[in-house]
Structure formats: structure tokens, C-alpha cells
Length: 352
Image (cartoon, rainbow, N blue to C red):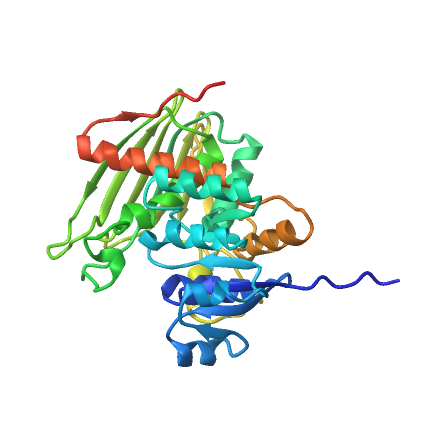
């Protein structure tokens, strides 16, 4: 007897700006276990053109009043993440929040505590764990061919010399490149190396008409290595993505994961060529100088939502549980404090 096909979980997507339209709507729609049911937006015509099967509602309250909605995905400006997540959790819904988790660590802890008290799934969209280059790097480190890592550099450089009129680039809560790209860089570092001992961070506004931080440089201190994280909007040659140096070899990667551009182009998620890295990393042997191309697996952001669906319907693990997202917020906030003080900030020891 053929087992019954699980009924997809109805999703309410809150926000239909860049993140909601480009990332969340197509990825949710590509997941068999989820259904894009409702979108909180006033762009009714744009939604109907892009996703005619989803209904538009003007407010989060309207979405939460529908008992058919089982999961709320929050893709709004950063200052709204925590209050909207709390409202959804109070209404008994599972929640996915786009990064960053919240404006600060205290706020994020409140959301996590509420989810735990209500027994509801809460996850944060750290999709860059599924970049092709990061998956290739994880596989490379697992082989041990680089030897013990002593220097790790991860960069998100962009060339956007003109300041755009959008909330991410205005002087407001949660704006700036450290809050936008910092969570990606930090999350990947923590996945690979765990919690650092300390962070030294420099944040700056480099563009002449800039209002928000558009240049960020951080060094995470570990007992046996240094992890360098950098993001800016001012690099004409945004080529370097990773430089990883070990005791016996280096691993070098140029170019960004292609999935964001594929999503922007409207390509079918998971279709031919999806997530395939056109410029694989290179391993450089320290003793001989020999350079070898090291292809890796394709990237797959859809895996995040596949795992969310399994967590909701089959008891699978949360792809990004709150404790991991809180760890990112701890380092993000410590970096902001380091920049304010112009000094290294130690992370408080964890008991046990």
C-alpha cells in the first residue's frame, strides 16, 4: 500500500521586498513539504504576477488570523524581526526569521525563550551554509589535506559606490553591512571552528554620501588560529572569497556562489546547473607549490526549507536551531562593541 503523501505546511511570508521576493518565495515554493499560502504585502499586483497561487494580506495580524497558516517566515527590515517573531509565536505558529536574528542579543534571547516555552520551531535563515564554495570548503577541511588551519580569511566584497535609498543603507537600527553580511560570515566561521575567544572589529562609513556602515573588518581570536572576516561595498575588484592557510597547504577561492544571481534571474530552483560553481577552488601545496583545482558539490539553498518542512511534519532536526543563531548574535554584538571601543572584546566564558 502506498503511504499517503504528506499535506504541505501552509506558509505566510511576511515581506515581499528583496529578501522575500528573491530568496524566500521561490525557495518555499520549490519545497514539496511547504506551500506559499499567504504573503504580507501591499504589492498585490506584483505578488499576483509572480506567485498567483498565494494570497496577499496587508498585515501580519491578518495572516495570523487564518488557522490554515502553520509557518510564518519573516523577511522584513531587521528592526521588525523580533517583534513580528514574538507575535507569530504568541499566535502558536512556527517561525523562520531571515538573518540577523534580531537587533541585539538580548532581544534574540527573548524570542528564543518564547519559542522554547511554547514548544514551537524557531529557525534563522543562515542560507550561506549551503553555498557551493562553503560546502566544498567543509569537504576539503574534512580530508585534512591542508593540515592544521592557522589563518582563515572570508570576504564578501561588493562594488556599489553609489548610496541607494533603501533601509539597509540608511542610518537606522539594524542597517549597514555588518548587520547585513556579518551574520553570514560569522555563521560560517562558527560552523567550522566554534566559538572564538575574542573579536577585534573595525566598522566604517567609506562612501562620501554614506549613512550606514559600508566597510567592516573583524578578526576572531582562537587559541590556535586567527579568522579574518571582511565585508564592504567599496571594492572595484570583488574577487577574493576565501583564503585558507594550513600547515601543509592553502585553499583559495574566488567568486561568489551563483544561487543569488540564479534566483534574481528567475531560474527554476534545482534545475539544470543549479548551484554549480563555475570557478572551483584551488589547493596549493606548500612544499611543491603545485596548484590543483578542487571542484565541490553544487550549492542548494532549498535544503534549508526541506529540513524545516521535515522538522514540522516528521520530527526532523531544525536546520538552524536557536542556540546556533544566538551564538552568531553574540559575536555580531561583540563586534559592534569592539568597534565602538576600538579594542578587542573577549567573549564571556561558557560554564561547563
